[in-house]
Length: 255
Image (cartoon, rainbow, N blue to C red; front, side, top):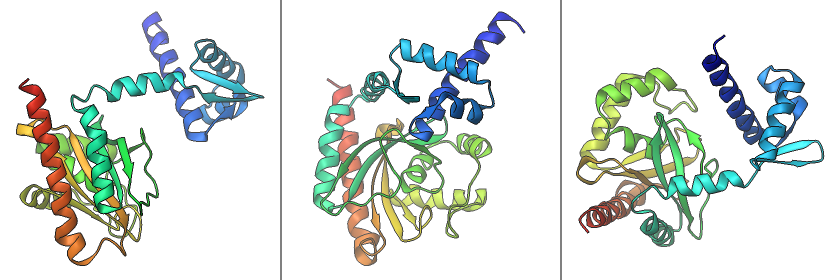
């Protein structure tokens, strides 16, 4: 194997180790080795190097991702031109609706939860800042997909598939494109029990002059997301906030 090939393989293993630690909430060198099907000595060498560089901390015989990753994550989030305004916009949205508010972006064909705010009655069964999920079964994901070229949607589905989470999840590409046409026409997307039973969400894309930035979404239990509130009141609120963010972005770009 060439030096370059060996280097690529090593890099891949290092990040696989980090992912394994993140998924398990910390792990021993033996557990990492078993998870990645590598030798314990190899796992230990990578973990020790990461520890020396302050990217991993050790507690007893368990390793965990260190807070040094936080620095890079915060810096990556600050790449959003409107990052300062985003937090206050989500907090206002959460306060107005009483629900969980998120801003979600697309990266490498998946949804990434970037920022959140909790309303008084907020319930969120699966999201956390930094978490990556598929796009097709969440409201924010469909809002984002509706702004992408058809070719790009095909590429994303080819790579990540259309995994079924409930009986309501869209698993047909034709059905997905029908849904995206509706989202594009009405300006917002919904999630009706597609990720979890009894869970709904409403999202609107933030795409000033076609420059897709992500999507604003609020979510909560079906018992509060129904009737006129789910069909018109919440979509109007989320769409308004998305529009305000678009105007803020355009304003910053013109300064």
